[in-house]
Amino acid sequence: MAFPSKTAALIATLLISPALSNAQDAATGGAILFTNVDIFDGVNEALMQDVSVLVTGNTITQISSDDIAVADAQVIDGSGYTLMPGMIDSHTHLMFSGITFAEVLFQRPGYGMIQGVVIAEQTLMNGITTVRDMAGDVFDLKRAIDEGTVPGPRVYPSGAMISQTSGHADFRLPVEPNPTITGKMTVPGQKGAGLVVDGVPLMLAAAREQLRLGASQIKLAISGSVSGINDPLDTTQFTVEEIEAAVAAAENWGTYVTVHGYNARAVNQAIDGGVKSIEHGQLLDEATLQRMAKEGIWLSIQPFTLCNEPGLTPDQNAKQAIVCEGTGKVYEAIKSLPDLKVVHGTDIFISPGKGIGVSEEVEQLERLLDWFTPYEILKMTTGNATELLQLSGPRNPYPGVIGRVEVDALADLLLVEGNPLESLDAVTDRDNIKIIMKDGVIYKNTLN
Ligand SMILES: [Zn+2]
Image (cartoon, rainbow, N blue to C red):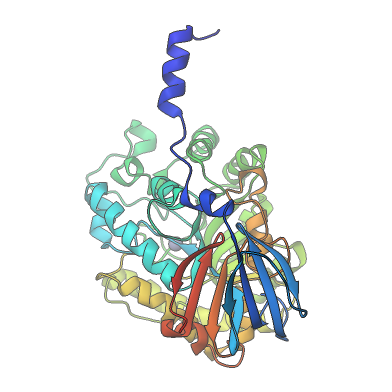
Protein backbone atom coordinates (compact mmCIF):
# COMPACT_ATOMS: atom_id res chain seq x y z
CA MET A 1 0.00 0.00 0.00
CA ALA A 2 1.42 3.38 -0.97
CA PHE A 3 1.25 6.44 1.25
CA PRO A 4 -0.81 9.34 -0.07
CA SER A 5 1.77 11.58 -1.69
CA LYS A 6 1.37 14.44 0.85
CA THR A 7 2.02 12.06 3.75
CA ALA A 8 5.04 10.64 2.00
CA ALA A 9 6.40 14.12 1.44
CA LEU A 10 5.86 15.04 5.10
CA ILE A 11 7.65 11.93 6.31
CA ALA A 12 10.49 12.61 3.92
CA THR A 13 10.80 16.13 5.34
CA LEU A 14 10.79 14.88 8.91
CA LEU A 15 13.45 12.29 8.24
CA ILE A 16 15.69 14.31 5.99
CA SER A 17 19.36 14.43 6.98
CA PRO A 18 20.75 17.57 8.53
CA ALA A 19 23.33 19.74 6.82
CA LEU A 20 26.65 18.27 5.81
CA SER A 21 28.80 17.44 8.77
CA ASN A 22 32.11 19.09 9.61
CA ALA A 23 33.77 15.76 9.07
CA GLN A 24 32.30 15.52 5.60
CA ASP A 25 33.40 19.07 4.86
CA ALA A 26 36.89 18.16 5.96
CA ALA A 27 36.81 15.00 3.89
CA THR A 28 36.53 17.12 0.79
CA GLY A 29 39.11 19.64 2.05
CA GLY A 30 42.87 19.97 1.76
CA ALA A 31 45.68 17.55 2.39
CA ILE A 32 47.84 17.28 5.50
CA LEU A 33 51.41 16.04 5.20
CA PHE A 34 53.36 14.73 8.18
CA THR A 35 57.10 14.76 7.49
CA ASN A 36 60.05 13.10 9.26
CA VAL A 37 57.90 10.99 11.57
CA ASP A 38 58.48 7.54 13.01
CA ILE A 39 55.41 5.33 12.75
CA PHE A 40 53.88 2.74 15.02
CA ASP A 41 51.43 1.22 12.56
CA GLY A 42 49.23 -0.52 15.15
CA VAL A 43 50.54 -3.99 14.37
CA ASN A 44 54.33 -4.21 14.03
CA GLU A 45 56.69 -3.82 16.93
CA ALA A 46 59.36 -2.13 14.83
CA LEU A 47 58.75 1.55 14.19
CA MET A 48 58.98 2.76 10.61
CA GLN A 49 61.70 5.39 10.80
CA ASP A 50 61.70 8.86 9.34
CA VAL A 51 58.88 8.73 6.81
CA SER A 52 56.28 11.07 5.37
CA VAL A 53 52.55 10.42 5.65
CA LEU A 54 49.97 12.12 3.50
CA VAL A 55 46.37 12.49 4.62
CA THR A 56 43.91 13.45 1.94
CA GLY A 57 40.42 14.18 3.19
CA ASN A 58 39.71 11.51 5.80
CA THR A 59 42.12 8.90 4.43
CA ILE A 60 45.81 8.07 4.65
CA THR A 61 46.77 8.16 0.99
CA GLN A 62 50.54 7.84 0.97
CA ILE A 63 53.34 6.64 3.26
CA SER A 64 56.86 7.00 1.95
CA SER A 65 60.45 7.19 3.09
CA ASP A 66 61.00 9.55 0.15
CA ASP A 67 59.74 13.12 0.22
CA ILE A 68 56.12 13.52 -0.81
CA ALA A 69 55.42 16.63 -2.84
CA VAL A 70 51.85 17.93 -2.71
CA ALA A 71 50.76 21.40 -3.68
CA ASP A 72 48.75 23.22 -0.99
CA ALA A 73 49.20 20.56 1.67
CA GLN A 74 49.44 21.68 5.30
CA VAL A 75 52.89 20.41 6.30
CA ILE A 76 53.50 19.23 9.86
CA ASP A 77 57.15 18.58 10.71
CA GLY A 78 57.05 15.53 12.94
CA SER A 79 60.78 15.29 13.66
CA GLY A 80 61.28 13.56 16.99
CA TYR A 81 57.67 12.46 17.24
CA THR A 82 55.85 9.19 16.62
CA LEU A 83 52.73 8.90 14.53
CA MET A 84 50.38 6.14 15.65
CA PRO A 85 46.74 5.15 15.24
CA GLY A 86 44.13 6.84 17.40
CA MET A 87 43.31 4.47 20.26
CA ILE A 88 40.19 2.32 20.45
CA ASP A 89 38.28 1.64 23.66
CA SER A 90 36.53 -1.60 22.86
CA HIS A 91 34.15 -1.46 25.82
CA THR A 92 32.82 1.82 27.04
CA HIS A 93 29.60 3.54 28.09
CA LEU A 94 29.68 7.17 27.06
CA MET A 95 26.20 7.79 28.44
CA PHE A 96 27.00 6.40 31.88
CA SER A 97 30.53 7.64 32.48
CA GLY A 98 29.72 11.03 33.92
CA ILE A 99 26.84 10.09 36.21
CA THR A 100 26.16 7.97 39.24
CA PHE A 101 24.56 4.55 39.35
CA ALA A 102 21.34 6.05 40.77
CA GLU A 103 21.24 8.54 37.94
CA VAL A 104 21.58 5.76 35.36
CA LEU A 105 18.66 3.92 36.91
CA PHE A 106 16.25 6.49 38.18
CA GLN A 107 16.86 10.00 36.86
CA ARG A 108 15.49 11.59 33.73
CA PRO A 109 17.88 11.16 30.78
CA GLY A 110 18.73 14.82 30.03
CA TYR A 111 21.51 15.24 32.57
CA GLY A 112 23.11 11.97 31.50
CA MET A 113 23.17 13.18 27.91
CA ILE A 114 24.82 16.46 28.89
CA GLN A 115 27.47 14.55 30.81
CA GLY A 116 27.80 12.18 27.85
CA VAL A 117 28.70 15.13 25.63
CA VAL A 118 31.42 16.18 28.07
CA ILE A 119 32.74 12.63 28.42
CA ALA A 120 32.83 12.18 24.65
CA GLU A 121 35.11 15.20 24.24
CA GLN A 122 37.35 14.16 27.15
CA THR A 123 37.58 10.66 25.68
CA LEU A 124 38.72 12.05 22.34
CA MET A 125 41.21 14.30 24.14
CA ASN A 126 42.68 11.18 25.77
CA GLY A 127 43.61 10.06 22.27
CA ILE A 128 40.72 7.62 21.98
CA THR A 129 39.27 8.13 18.53
CA THR A 130 36.90 5.14 18.45
CA VAL A 131 34.75 3.42 21.06
CA ARG A 132 32.53 0.38 21.08
CA ASP A 133 29.68 1.54 23.28
CA MET A 134 28.46 -1.49 25.20
CA ALA A 135 25.10 -0.25 26.55
CA GLY A 136 23.30 3.02 26.69
CA ASP A 137 21.10 5.19 24.52
CA VAL A 138 24.08 6.72 22.75
CA PHE A 139 22.51 7.06 19.31
CA ASP A 140 21.78 10.81 19.44
CA LEU A 141 25.22 11.54 20.89
CA LYS A 142 26.81 9.48 18.11
CA ARG A 143 24.82 11.42 15.55
CA ALA A 144 25.90 14.79 16.96
CA ILE A 145 29.55 13.65 17.01
CA ASP A 146 29.38 12.31 13.46
CA GLU A 147 27.80 15.55 12.26
CA GLY A 148 30.60 17.52 13.89
CA THR A 149 28.20 19.29 16.25
CA VAL A 150 30.17 18.14 19.29
CA PRO A 151 33.66 16.60 19.46
CA GLY A 152 33.97 12.94 20.35
CA PRO A 153 35.20 9.57 19.18
CA ARG A 154 33.64 7.39 16.53
CA VAL A 155 30.93 5.35 18.24
CA TYR A 156 29.97 1.75 17.53
CA PRO A 157 26.67 1.67 19.44
CA SER A 158 25.04 -1.43 20.93
CA GLY A 159 21.98 0.39 22.30
CA ALA A 160 20.35 -1.28 25.26
CA MET A 161 22.01 -4.31 26.79
CA ILE A 162 19.56 -7.21 26.56
CA SER A 163 19.14 -9.27 29.67
CA GLN A 164 16.83 -11.90 31.15
CA THR A 165 14.65 -11.62 34.24
CA SER A 166 17.06 -11.50 37.19
CA GLY A 167 19.91 -10.97 34.74
CA HIS A 168 22.57 -8.28 34.68
CA ALA A 169 20.25 -5.52 33.40
CA ASP A 170 17.34 -6.36 35.68
CA PHE A 171 17.79 -3.33 37.93
CA ARG A 172 14.17 -3.15 39.07
CA LEU A 173 13.23 -1.97 42.49
CA PRO A 174 11.90 -4.88 44.57
CA VAL A 175 8.35 -3.54 44.20
CA GLU A 176 8.56 -3.05 40.43
CA PRO A 177 6.58 -5.57 38.35
CA ASN A 178 8.31 -7.97 35.99
CA PRO A 179 8.31 -6.46 32.50
CA THR A 180 8.15 -9.79 30.71
CA ILE A 181 5.10 -10.88 32.69
CA THR A 182 3.28 -7.54 32.75
CA GLY A 183 4.43 -6.03 29.46
CA LYS A 184 5.40 -2.88 31.39
CA MET A 185 8.90 -1.77 30.54
CA THR A 186 11.37 -0.99 33.33
CA VAL A 187 12.77 2.54 33.71
CA PRO A 188 16.24 1.50 32.41
CA GLY A 189 14.37 -0.11 29.52
CA GLN A 190 12.51 3.10 28.75
CA LYS A 191 15.82 4.94 28.86
CA GLY A 192 17.44 2.52 26.43
CA ALA A 193 20.03 1.39 28.95
CA GLY A 194 19.02 -2.23 29.48
CA LEU A 195 16.08 -4.35 28.37
CA VAL A 196 14.70 -7.32 30.28
CA VAL A 197 13.24 -10.03 28.05
CA ASP A 198 12.52 -13.75 28.35
CA GLY A 199 11.87 -16.20 25.55
CA VAL A 200 12.67 -16.27 21.87
CA PRO A 201 9.97 -13.89 20.53
CA LEU A 202 10.86 -11.10 22.98
CA MET A 203 14.57 -11.65 22.36
CA LEU A 204 13.99 -11.25 18.63
CA ALA A 205 11.99 -8.07 19.18
CA ALA A 206 14.59 -6.60 21.55
CA ALA A 207 17.50 -7.32 19.20
CA ARG A 208 15.63 -6.03 16.18
CA GLU A 209 14.67 -2.87 18.09
CA GLN A 210 18.34 -2.06 18.70
CA LEU A 211 19.12 -2.70 15.03
CA ARG A 212 16.28 -0.37 14.10
CA LEU A 213 17.84 2.34 16.26
CA GLY A 214 21.17 1.88 14.49
CA ALA A 215 23.10 -0.61 16.63
CA SER A 216 26.29 -1.76 14.95
CA GLN A 217 26.29 -4.92 17.11
CA ILE A 218 23.98 -6.50 19.67
CA LYS A 219 24.98 -6.85 23.31
CA LEU A 220 23.51 -9.52 25.57
CA ALA A 221 24.18 -10.20 29.23
CA ILE A 222 24.73 -13.95 29.54
CA SER A 223 26.27 -14.33 32.96
CA GLY A 224 26.20 -12.87 36.43
CA SER A 225 27.68 -9.42 36.94
CA VAL A 226 29.36 -7.22 39.51
CA SER A 227 26.86 -4.37 39.38
CA GLY A 228 23.68 -6.47 39.00
CA ILE A 229 21.44 -6.73 42.02
CA ASN A 230 19.95 -10.20 41.60
CA ASP A 231 22.49 -12.05 39.50
CA PRO A 232 25.27 -13.96 41.25
CA LEU A 233 28.52 -14.19 39.29
CA ASP A 234 28.28 -17.92 38.76
CA THR A 235 24.92 -17.76 36.98
CA THR A 236 24.33 -18.66 33.34
CA GLN A 237 21.81 -16.33 31.74
CA PHE A 238 19.50 -17.04 28.80
CA THR A 239 19.15 -20.42 27.15
CA VAL A 240 21.02 -21.37 24.05
CA GLU A 241 17.78 -20.97 22.07
CA GLU A 242 17.37 -17.38 23.26
CA ILE A 243 21.00 -16.61 22.40
CA GLU A 244 20.60 -18.21 18.98
CA ALA A 245 17.57 -15.98 18.36
CA ALA A 246 19.61 -12.82 19.01
CA VAL A 247 22.40 -14.15 16.82
CA ALA A 248 19.92 -14.84 14.01
CA ALA A 249 18.49 -11.30 14.27
CA ALA A 250 22.00 -9.80 14.21
CA GLU A 251 23.25 -11.99 11.40
CA ASN A 252 20.16 -11.26 9.32
CA TRP A 253 21.30 -7.63 9.55
CA GLY A 254 24.86 -8.62 8.65
CA THR A 255 26.32 -8.04 12.10
CA TYR A 256 27.15 -9.96 15.28
CA VAL A 257 26.38 -10.49 18.94
CA THR A 258 28.77 -9.75 21.75
CA VAL A 259 28.08 -10.70 25.36
CA HIS A 260 28.74 -9.56 28.87
CA GLY A 261 30.15 -12.78 30.35
CA TYR A 262 32.43 -13.75 33.20
CA ASN A 263 32.16 -17.44 33.96
CA ALA A 264 33.14 -20.37 31.77
CA ARG A 265 29.79 -22.19 31.72
CA ALA A 266 27.87 -19.15 30.54
CA VAL A 267 30.49 -18.15 28.01
CA ASN A 268 30.66 -21.64 26.52
CA GLN A 269 26.89 -21.71 26.13
CA ALA A 270 27.02 -18.31 24.41
CA ILE A 271 29.71 -19.51 22.01
CA ASP A 272 27.54 -22.57 21.32
CA GLY A 273 24.77 -20.10 20.50
CA GLY A 274 26.89 -18.29 17.92
CA VAL A 275 28.23 -15.18 19.62
CA LYS A 276 31.46 -13.79 18.22
CA SER A 277 32.84 -11.73 21.08
CA ILE A 278 33.05 -11.90 24.88
CA GLU A 279 33.10 -8.76 27.00
CA HIS A 280 35.04 -9.20 30.29
CA GLY A 281 35.90 -12.93 30.70
CA GLN A 282 37.84 -12.43 33.94
CA LEU A 283 36.64 -15.76 35.38
CA LEU A 284 37.34 -17.89 32.33
CA ASP A 285 39.36 -21.06 32.61
CA GLU A 286 42.22 -22.11 30.38
CA ALA A 287 40.07 -24.55 28.36
CA THR A 288 37.56 -21.86 27.45
CA LEU A 289 40.27 -19.39 26.48
CA GLN A 290 41.84 -22.09 24.32
CA ARG A 291 38.47 -22.76 22.71
CA MET A 292 38.08 -19.05 21.98
CA ALA A 293 41.54 -18.92 20.42
CA LYS A 294 40.74 -21.95 18.28
CA GLU A 295 37.32 -20.72 17.17
CA GLY A 296 38.33 -17.09 16.64
CA ILE A 297 36.10 -15.68 19.39
CA TRP A 298 37.15 -12.21 20.53
CA LEU A 299 38.01 -11.37 24.12
CA SER A 300 37.29 -7.74 24.99
CA ILE A 301 38.76 -7.52 28.48
CA GLN A 302 39.31 -4.73 31.02
CA PRO A 303 41.87 -4.36 33.81
CA PHE A 304 39.47 -4.71 36.73
CA THR A 305 42.23 -4.60 39.29
CA LEU A 306 40.63 -2.39 41.90
CA CYS A 307 39.12 -4.91 44.29
CA ASN A 308 37.02 -2.32 46.07
CA GLU A 309 35.46 0.62 44.28
CA PRO A 310 33.93 3.63 46.01
CA GLY A 311 30.86 3.77 43.76
CA LEU A 312 29.78 0.19 44.54
CA THR A 313 27.69 -1.28 47.35
CA PRO A 314 29.19 -3.91 49.73
CA ASP A 315 27.42 -6.68 47.78
CA GLN A 316 28.78 -5.37 44.51
CA ASN A 317 32.26 -5.02 45.96
CA ALA A 318 32.19 -8.63 47.19
CA LYS A 319 31.68 -9.66 43.56
CA GLN A 320 34.25 -7.13 42.38
CA ALA A 321 36.86 -8.81 44.59
CA ILE A 322 36.31 -12.14 42.82
CA VAL A 323 36.54 -10.57 39.37
CA CYS A 324 39.59 -8.62 40.47
CA GLU A 325 41.37 -11.83 41.43
CA GLY A 326 40.44 -13.43 38.10
CA THR A 327 41.76 -10.51 36.05
CA GLY A 328 45.43 -11.26 36.69
CA LYS A 329 44.97 -14.97 36.05
CA VAL A 330 43.35 -14.36 32.68
CA TYR A 331 45.98 -11.80 31.67
CA GLU A 332 48.64 -14.40 32.50
CA ALA A 333 46.80 -16.98 30.40
CA ILE A 334 46.50 -14.56 27.48
CA LYS A 335 50.27 -14.22 27.40
CA SER A 336 50.57 -17.90 26.51
CA LEU A 337 47.78 -17.87 23.90
CA PRO A 338 49.18 -15.90 20.96
CA ASP A 339 46.26 -16.90 18.71
CA LEU A 340 43.61 -15.47 21.05
CA LYS A 341 42.16 -12.25 19.68
CA VAL A 342 42.28 -9.73 22.53
CA VAL A 343 41.24 -6.09 22.66
CA HIS A 344 41.36 -3.66 25.55
CA GLY A 345 38.34 -1.89 26.94
CA THR A 346 37.74 0.23 30.02
CA ASP A 347 34.07 -0.37 30.90
CA ILE A 348 34.05 2.97 32.70
CA PHE A 349 30.64 3.86 34.03
CA ILE A 350 28.86 5.15 37.12
CA SER A 351 31.68 7.55 37.76
CA PRO A 352 31.44 9.00 41.26
CA GLY A 353 32.51 12.45 40.11
CA LYS A 354 32.98 14.68 37.11
CA GLY A 355 35.85 13.62 34.88
CA ILE A 356 36.94 10.81 37.20
CA GLY A 357 35.87 8.15 34.75
CA VAL A 358 37.81 9.69 31.96
CA SER A 359 41.05 9.99 33.89
CA GLU A 360 40.56 6.30 34.67
CA GLU A 361 40.94 5.60 30.95
CA VAL A 362 44.57 6.60 31.31
CA GLU A 363 45.07 4.78 34.61
CA GLN A 364 43.71 1.60 33.12
CA LEU A 365 46.30 1.61 30.35
CA GLU A 366 49.00 2.00 33.00
CA ARG A 367 47.59 -0.90 35.03
CA LEU A 368 48.16 -3.20 32.05
CA LEU A 369 51.92 -2.66 32.43
CA ASP A 370 51.83 -5.23 35.25
CA TRP A 371 51.35 -7.88 32.57
CA PHE A 372 52.14 -6.48 29.16
CA THR A 373 54.75 -4.46 27.31
CA PRO A 374 53.77 -1.05 25.93
CA TYR A 375 53.77 -2.63 22.49
CA GLU A 376 51.32 -5.36 23.55
CA ILE A 377 49.10 -2.79 25.26
CA LEU A 378 49.02 -0.43 22.31
CA LYS A 379 48.37 -3.25 19.88
CA MET A 380 45.34 -4.24 21.98
CA THR A 381 44.11 -0.65 21.74
CA THR A 382 44.81 -0.15 18.03
CA GLY A 383 45.57 -2.77 15.40
CA ASN A 384 43.98 -5.71 17.20
CA ALA A 385 40.57 -4.02 17.08
CA THR A 386 40.56 -3.43 13.33
CA GLU A 387 39.15 -6.83 12.50
CA LEU A 388 36.67 -6.77 15.40
CA LEU A 389 35.15 -3.52 14.13
CA GLN A 390 34.78 -5.08 10.68
CA LEU A 391 32.48 -7.75 12.18
CA SER A 392 29.68 -5.19 12.02
CA GLY A 393 29.67 -5.77 8.24
CA PRO A 394 27.08 -3.59 6.50
CA ARG A 395 26.08 -2.14 9.91
CA ASN A 396 29.57 -0.69 10.33
CA PRO A 397 28.97 3.07 10.66
CA TYR A 398 32.53 3.83 9.52
CA PRO A 399 33.47 1.45 6.71
CA GLY A 400 37.21 1.43 6.27
CA VAL A 401 40.29 0.41 8.19
CA ILE A 402 40.43 1.80 11.74
CA GLY A 403 43.29 1.27 14.18
CA ARG A 404 46.18 1.15 11.74
CA VAL A 405 48.54 3.53 10.01
CA GLU A 406 48.55 2.21 6.48
CA VAL A 407 47.60 3.44 3.04
CA ASP A 408 43.80 3.62 2.56
CA ALA A 409 43.12 3.47 6.31
CA LEU A 410 40.88 6.14 7.83
CA ALA A 411 42.96 9.05 9.14
CA ASP A 412 42.59 8.62 12.92
CA LEU A 413 46.05 9.55 14.12
CA LEU A 414 48.01 10.63 17.16
CA LEU A 415 51.33 12.45 16.95
CA VAL A 416 53.07 11.78 20.25
CA GLU A 417 56.31 12.87 21.84
CA GLY A 418 58.78 10.03 22.23
CA ASN A 419 58.49 6.35 21.40
CA PRO A 420 55.28 4.89 22.87
CA LEU A 421 56.66 1.37 22.50
CA GLU A 422 59.48 2.25 24.88
CA SER A 423 57.41 4.28 27.30
CA LEU A 424 53.65 4.28 27.57
CA ASP A 425 53.92 7.83 28.95
CA ALA A 426 53.91 8.94 25.33
CA VAL A 427 50.15 8.37 25.38
CA THR A 428 49.19 8.23 29.05
CA ASP A 429 50.63 11.69 29.73
CA ARG A 430 48.15 13.71 27.73
CA ASP A 431 50.65 16.55 27.29
CA ASN A 432 52.73 14.18 25.18
CA ILE A 433 49.88 13.79 22.70
CA LYS A 434 50.61 16.75 20.45
CA ILE A 435 48.11 16.11 17.68
CA ILE A 436 44.82 14.26 17.74
CA MET A 437 43.24 13.67 14.36
CA LYS A 438 39.98 11.85 13.71
CA ASP A 439 38.59 11.28 10.25
CA GLY A 440 41.21 13.64 8.83
CA VAL A 441 40.15 16.49 11.17
CA ILE A 442 42.63 17.84 13.74
CA TYR A 443 40.96 18.19 17.16
CA LYS A 444 44.11 19.02 19.12
CA ASN A 445 47.40 20.54 18.01
CA THR A 446 49.89 21.69 20.64
CA LEU A 447 52.95 21.33 18.45
CA ASN A 448 55.41 24.23 18.92
ZN1 LIG B 1 30.10 -2.54 30.37
